[in-house]
Amino acid sequence: MENLIFNFNKKKIESKDETTLCAIINVTPDSFSDGGKYFGVEKAVNRAKELIKDGAKMLDIGGESTRPGSSFVEIKDEINRVCPVIKEIRKFTDIAISVDTWKSEVAKEALNAGADIVNDITGFLGDKNMAKVVSKTKAGAILMFNPVIARANHEGSKIFPKFSFENLDDLFKEYENLPITQLMEKYFLKSLEIARKNNISKDRIMLDPGIGFGLTKRENFILIKNLEKIHNMGYPIFLGVSRKRFITNILQENGFNIDKETTQGLANMDNASSNLSFFASLNSVEAIRVHEIKPHLLAIKIAQSIKRAEKMENINFKSYN
Image (cartoon, rainbow, N blue to C red; front, side):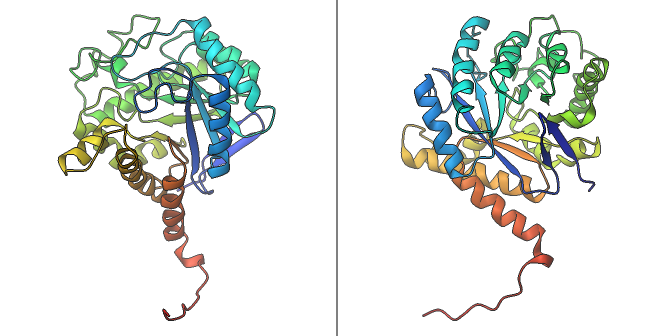
């Protein structure tokens, strides 16, 4: 595979390097797995310090939950949630920071506050001004395939909030019955067309397959199994699978504790999620978005060792005592 490069604010992520672990900081009261836990500037900043210490190389900061059943957060409120956190983090680290928002005004203020990347779950489709905001900076853009937008009438989409200021119901009407990998490619082509029209160069873009957004159990795994389709388009991958419902469904089916209010339940969710990080890293995914760093870091260290087997030190181990 060719070495794909994601450039942003004089920083970069490359395919040839170890998979980047991007830690989630939800500055919200209602996120699906840690709602309220890091709500507030002090809590969020302290969490950032913990995650960096554990090995995070990137932070993804969001002020609006996108879980099924969540509510729209007003632009001013979202800005007031994320920007003070970004400013405080910038006082002690130059770590890559992405702002998780589909609203251009929030993105603009977050970039001014010190963010490097806009993580847009609508892939530039939800807010017609988002690409313009990004184009006026040197920031990077993560463009997500959003099945909720692509198939508004699909059973899995109906439980999600609306992720757009525009009426996009008919935009993908001719494609909505395509197999999920083909629908993803059609969606990306529209997102990338907007990027080109706004002079956002290819090397400033990562693509996210949108795992967990209005997808069936089968479709989630099909997209994960076919991640190379994004690489074949010539773009690095940003993958978010941590603690998502299709993972907890597998755990529940097999009798594992998935109670997020218990230490064991969260550990099971993180350990299961880290198996997908292992798979992703083995398949050269450039960045993975996670809630906890340590289990995923262990997974990618093993995956990277397998990938670099021929370059490993050829040591002999001593016998056990």
